[in-house]
Image 1 (cartoon, rainbow, N blue to C red):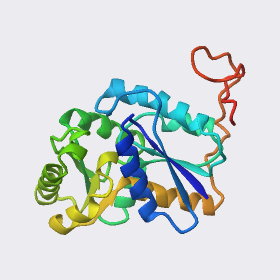
Image 2 (cartoon, helix red, strand yellow):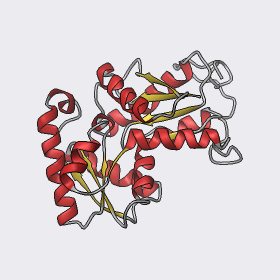
Image 3 (tube, rainbow, N blue to C red):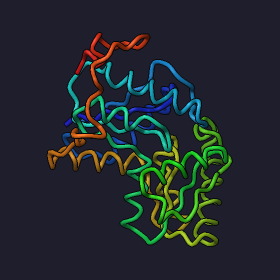
Image 4 (tube, rainbow, N blue to C red):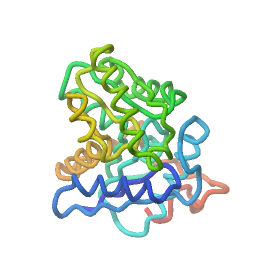
Length: 247
C-alpha cells in the first residue's frame, strides 16, 4: 500500500524527518511518501498558520499524481482533516487524534507535551472536538518553537522531558503524547527518562492508517463527510465542478 504523509508546514527537512519516522514503523510493503505543501508557513504555531495549512495540505494531497491508499496529516492540532475526508475516498488519519486514542489504550490519563504555550488552547480545542479530552490530564508547553526542535535538538529533548516528568508527577498522567509532528522520533529518549509510555503521533497514525486499509475501511460518505457539492471554485486549482481533477 502507499500512504501519503503530509507535513503541514513548508519546511522540507521536517517533512524528511516525519517521513523517516513513518517508514521506521510502517510494515514491509508499505510505501511512505512524504509531501510538503507548495505554500504556507515554515512552521504552524497559531490559528492563522493552521487554517492556511489546511488549504495547503488539501492542495498538496489532491495534486499528488499517483494512486494512494491513505493519508496521514502530520500536524498536531492543525485544521483540515475534515476537508480531506470530504475530498478523498481513502482513510485520512490526523496525528492528534491517532496519538490521543492510542494513549488511551495504555493508561487511564494522558498528557500532551507540545511546543509553545500559544498552541495549548488549539490542541485542547481539537481534543475536545474529537471527543478525546475526557482522559487528557493536561496539555503542557515545552517552550520550544517548532523550528527549534531541529535547530537545537538536545535542548528540545530536555525541555520536553522536563514537562513530561511534571505531567507524570503533578498532573498524574500515565502516558505522554508528543504534541508536534516535528517531535517525531524523540519518543524513545523521552520514554527512558520519564518512565512511562510515550506516544508518537506519526507512528500512531501510520499504524492506524495501515490497519484501516487492511480492513478495507474508509470514511463514511452518507452525511458529514460526503463529497463536496458541485460548485464553481475560484482561485484554487480545482476543475469547474469543484472536485479536484485528479480524483
